[in-house]
Length: 503
Image (spheres, rainbow, N blue to C red):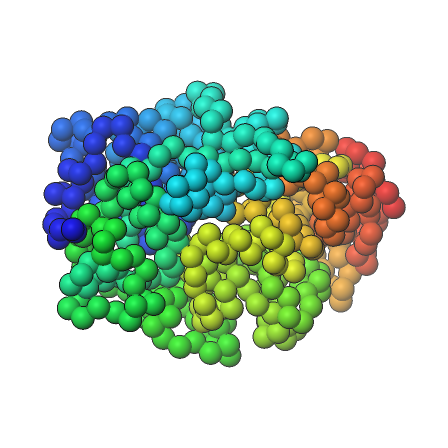
């Protein structure tokens, strides 16, 4: 039977050596008060220690002194297994300093492994990850030099087919954020941007005889409609009530509390950009790439658009009228709306549906998307892409591997080079004024996020759209298929490539 208690009382249920699973996504829907209480306890008692943290989507709030950052930094955590570290500003730096073990698995594969554990199955099979960095025949999921545990991913064969088998340690504590708890302890997520893996996490932890702790905004007397209760009260051990911070009206739109018709998506998106610091100076190169990439959209496409340059695709889809004829999706479970960016990434304006994250990755993993638009840090001559690991920086693979592994058409949106690149376009004519000093097309990528070999074997159509040209993946490597007006193929393209391409 659940008990209502303070956050400080609730975190006393966490013991040394526990494996804590956090339901959150990048920087949204974190049970912040539970993390803060855990830090207060650790600061005072130096316990709990030797913790393992698991999260499919990451658990930061874009502030290195809030949420879990402080107790991780001070030594409470021995191991982190996470899909994305982007919003964990302090933690992602400490990973590269070998301060604790850290493992990066594809976001959807963690989500499915949690769901498997909820059903009493040790792990989950997936085609996602074959021949990229997480494959144990390549690098494996360990990020730093001390992360050598090989138990999380195994290469296996079933009925003559190759799979990766993803397995997590037994989850013993759940930290979850919900909207309200009724008098029976049932948890609803009405004002939340997503429910994520909440139900699966609670089921898995209870199957392992652990403790489920939920932070909510309020208590309500009457139970919600049965379909609105995501977690039944019988799975809950502790409920912590923490009044939420006041939200701007734009944030309420993301929770679906305000009906946002299609015609107002752009207006609400601009409001959110101003609040989340997502507004960026859009340069000419990004505009050229976004416009060309958007030409690949077709009526009734189901689509995922990545962050950064790919976000320009949605702008041009809106301009050419295509946005009203496609269905956008976001990894956290939203479908049929317009994805937010910046610190609200993972939420959607005007979503038609928001379901469990594992279900969204079922769609991605089975090729349910028609097309996706992704960014890239590096591309090599075999079409391999590095999108997760830069020089001295680490954000993680996130949902990238799941999204690109089976989608019939994959469009990578990237500048030809970076740091100092200057491009102009007048009346459709592109001029490369100055090349950047850092190449994006390299002899060998630092780490493989996307396998050209697997894409060819899967029969996927893969494009690499830049501000001056377009490449397409073939079984022999990259083929130069388009040169934009004003671009000299020898001077502006071929002279800068460290590998041969087909023309």
